[in-house]
Length: 169
Length: 148
Image (cartoon, rainbow over all chains, first blue to last red):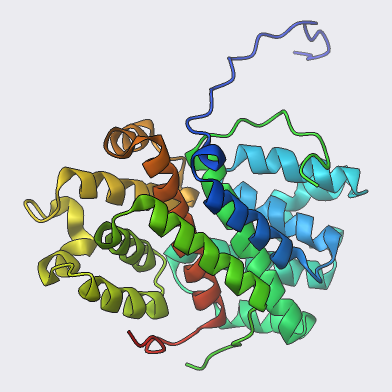
């Protein structure tokens, strides 16, 4: 029987890949608009829900930098490790989340993956049951903004692992 | 098919417009910008954005042959130049993140044509249209709302 208790004390990981491009430095007006958009999109939304949306979209878009940031922010704000770990399989672990959170997660997936088709009526209608109209517009804005950060993060290969919670606040 | 909601926080809309304007200005090539924006809107199936940007592309003098063949640009030999092809390849990679990462060869090819500042604005433009695609498809805003 194999055991894995004898973990070596030093493990050699592969080296960190350098970022491709410091996009904010080369496009400062674009960055400023992104910061404004971020501020506008989070207005009125519950912080716990906001971070779940951020993490889930970042998982779907494979944005390592954004996953690093938002899991740390969520943990710093008191989110449980268990809910963060289960998030990539939320459909099978629904009892970790509220019905409102699930509605937001379903909408997050639909609005993030537009290339496969449209945002299904049942997904939108379920979200509309849990969020009043203006709040729902903010959820859509929040999903949009994290998708935007994900695109910068992945394309410019921003390196994860260096974020400290609250760094950009 | 009916519109789901027309609500969008005015501050969100203004920031999205500022993002689009800054990216487009920094790229400095309005005709190419429209090709990029239309291709992303095709991938994201945004009827409102396609309707709007096909009209704008025509205003900027983008030819009908390019617009007709844009969805198959990779196969359309002689219709798009190397710079346009590099930009379109990057547009597709940045738009479809769910299929994987942005490949090195796609990134390097675009970097070769645009330089760092141009590239940062080109990426910004792809992000900006992806934003509009999401808020328009998500709220099901019908095409036809744009008048040049």
